[in-house]
Image (tube, rainbow, N blue to C red; front, side, top):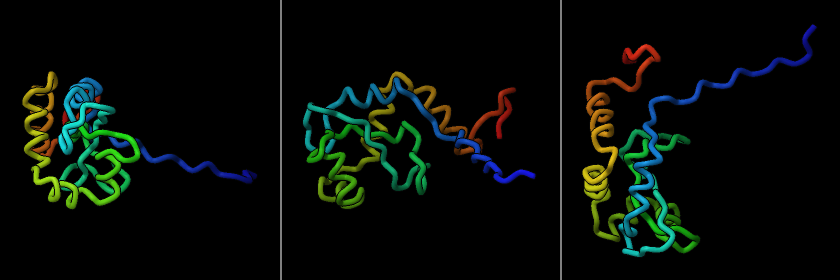
Length: 130
């Protein structure tokens, strides 16, 4: 008789696009909120993206924000994204588009975005879409 039963872990999410190279590109820019050049972090925009509750969005939704406890990245979490961007008066999606256009990964990002518009969220190991 088995006294304990192990719970199967959920399969990891595979539809999130990740790229350390694109995040490095994002971190190479000044903070898009206050123009600081110190302690820049790649902050993921969550509203109106492919993220969800407890799920980080794809890396092409990252913006350069300064870090630290008083930085713009922490401020974004404290006051909320909508409030932060309305106070700053900038469109985060326009900044994301500019970052993608200058990214060394732009062709791959554009391919992933085109696939998602067609409803393709990922690929099986044999290359067929799911």
